[in-house]
Image (tube, rainbow, N blue to C red; front, side, top):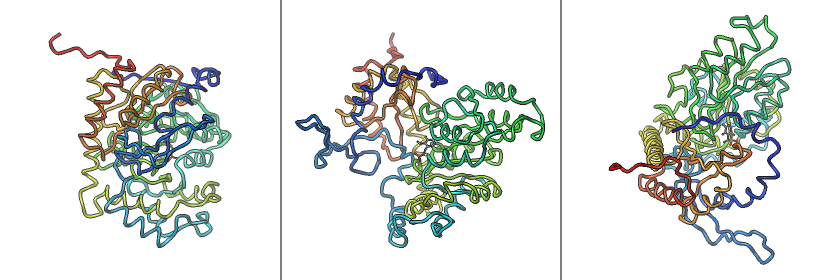
Length: 443
Ligand code: PMP
């Protein structure tokens, strides 16, 4: 039932103002409200009301408890944790919320160097470098790696931070059809001959950029096939693991582990700490030479304040739990739980007749609404029944491919998931988005 959606940009052109301006205002029913709790399995949503002048205000004393089907809290580390939280509090006392310095001018604490070593070890690369924000990691690193005279070949559905980084680099950018290795090869073949040595071709450098799990599709990257093409044409690979690191693979090592890829075959591994690790910031993991080069040249490293120490401590502690270095097997349990929860929820949604995108094991599962006019009713009805969902529409998707993006967490109990399914089923009938009517067993 999965549907492959490709190439958003042409459909988007010129439609922004006319069709979507009012829609967005009306669509802010659910996550448009402030949250007054950790983004765990259940969240406290602040009530919204309009005053006499029709101005939107929030009544912070009135809270609605909602089942959270929208946060990237894949392993449940965003909530208070018996191992992580005390250590984060200690780090806040010992250091401070912020370093007030860039990395090279006193902004490197012991925690920063510890996390760089740990992150590199976790993803299976020789070295790593940290950044204060995942978005900036892509948008600042890509221009530090490649410039005019270089060629970037980017998946058509890559995240905006990659698109921005690629544009800002000054390199020539070509796009290949989403997750289609044969088209990547076609694009490469247009640029260079197979087997041509790096020194004899028109590009100083070629980088192919893909994601581990595509955030709007829930789909896994066809990494082994992509790497085979890159090797054939001697192109570098850049993998964004924002949604896959920590969340998938037997020991949480992401898409490489799940698909049996040797991390040595991926030149640049990028990831964020904002999802599975319940913190903030991002990293690049690569060879010692590349990391050393970035530490000397990347403006975001040289001129941007370093990651907040408590945020760093949170990631260190979360990785230790995942690795079992906290002395418990909670990490393994969380990984088994997210896989089980995701596969259960996805299978049930399919059974109900929804069109759900994405692959097995992926905790990201978009439910297709198609018509953006269905968004306000969908999110409002879910909220009425205390279920918080994220809806995604143009320009993050093509105009007529609006969707609700469900994110499953290890912290959801089976009861939570059953409640979510019950509400989604009712709202799905009401809004008319069950595109695959389920036949009864007798018919
Ligand atoms: N890459 C991808 C694939 C993402 O989905 C995101 C954000 N969700 C980012 C990068 C940016 O990361 P952050 O939100 O941690 O800044």
